[in-house]
Length: 391
Image 1 (spheres, rainbow, N blue to C red):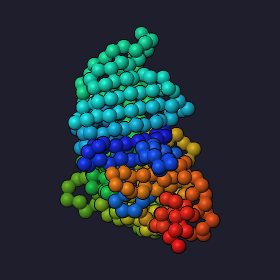
Image 2: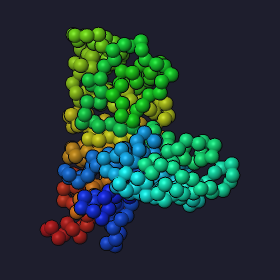
Image 3: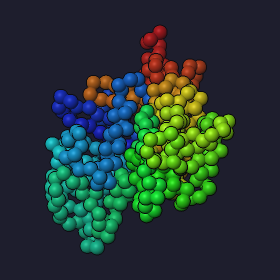
Image 4: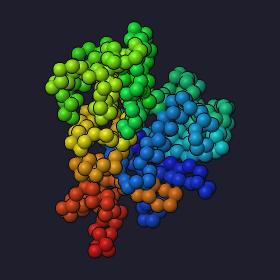
């Protein structure tokens, strides 16, 4: 399932209001932000790149039922969403205030399945074949309830929320997370990829489930970003004061193995991401992958190669990827067709992309300038009209 658009606002009408919106149309704000399968979110510092990723992540926690409305840091929010579920359109609206649901609506191909105000509302029941009244706690979402017989149409939203993966590439990505007992891994226990640092455990489960195909894909992917390794495994760490296990690799030009404590941060970030990404793709479980600060800690060539690799692996699959970067060298080599540029105005982060600014994006190809200039000169904002004014 693909997130097609989002319109988001927190603390609407209040001092701390902030919203995610698409480019204004004829001066009218409150347009939705649109997404494609592959998205690279760029923008100057403090425009809202990480906020965008966190907003989508928090949405997934709500839809999966992992978090209650009252547990979010911002307890007064509005989400207006559109999903594409294999050609079927799912429209979902959620508003909560002071940690309690105010409105919640769900439509499938324009047919209303849920209409809720505060703690009461109506929803469609399959066996009765009609809408019935219901009541539930004010800090819980109706769509997160589990009744696959009566409301099977909630399942796509729940699954999207549960299987979303979130990688903070500028963080450790599990480098300091070690296994104490390699034999204690439960084979039947599901892997949580949403925020996982369990790289060693994920690798073991991937190798057990998919065999050499899994290992070979990781080795091949690492080679494509110029980390040439011949083997990858999980074993006891060297030179560590207590028994612990972690991921280790044999680099082609180094005699000894390199374990995760000895790896450079950049190498481990790439390895961790590719272990989890390949596990997800082979398992055919992910619906959305969020990667904040993609390429952080890698040199330019590896950053570009990693993004190219992700695009190659995701293109044509049912997986959606939303990445952020502020690396000018990466921007210069990633086609504008994947870009969403954030433009900050008071209380709003506005998105300009190929869907809502096609003429401007196409016109830029005639300038002879670099992709980074598209951002730095704010060409995305007014196109040639703005450029002429600057001259």
